[in-house]
Image (cartoon, rainbow, N blue to C red):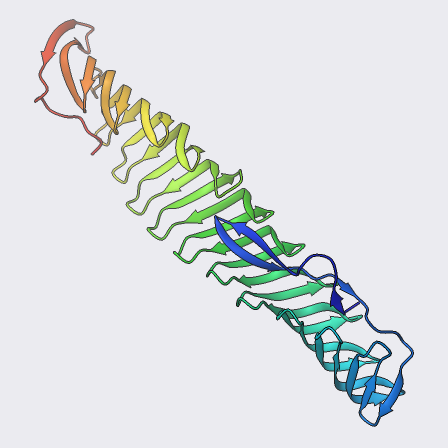
Length: 317
């Protein structure tokens, strides 16, 4: 029943993406009895001191009216048989609800406004906000499903800096399938898990056209994966903390390199395979052969050679 709050405060501090948000929680208890005496024509006082004003029928509020409780809570709107069906509730702590009611409980379409400016607008069921839009005082916007006034289920989070997360949330944390779009155009799509926005497997698409299809750790490429560049060059192999360090590079001209990498360049031991089937095996430094190497010709002939650092660089272009 609608009345004064009991238990914990209706304002609780919650966290999403490291940002502090205030969330409304209502617990209600009925402050009035059903045996009232009319004191004068358009005003009644209940035995607990609650003041009822407006239109009456058979001693009960019927039509437009208001109820002001001793604790300062005030209900204004349309009443049926002393129960509010549509209107506004202003609580003594500054929380305000505007919308529809059923059995004196928020039910239907409505909006909650907190003293700090946070607003929840959407669908209520038996006093619980379960679907709609939350605009928080720090600029975060959430649109989607709620449970116990907490972001739960499918939804969309927009941060003040323009970052957008769309997907599954559990206890206001991204959990399950989702997509992050960064202000710079970068997009992460895949499976999210952990205590913050944290992708574990999926696709990262950058504004320059580079596409990563990899495993992630702490939102960095980490594990097995593949990178595709706009010109068709592909890297496939092992990543560690965002860096490709071992695997296969297939360049846009058809040349293939297999071996070690550092800073996205061939670095360490590796082998180049050319279109004609010829191969070069040796040590690479910053994308260039360095020192002695082995040439293996298409006919199987093997020859040793020596390369200096100033010789041609392979690169990922």
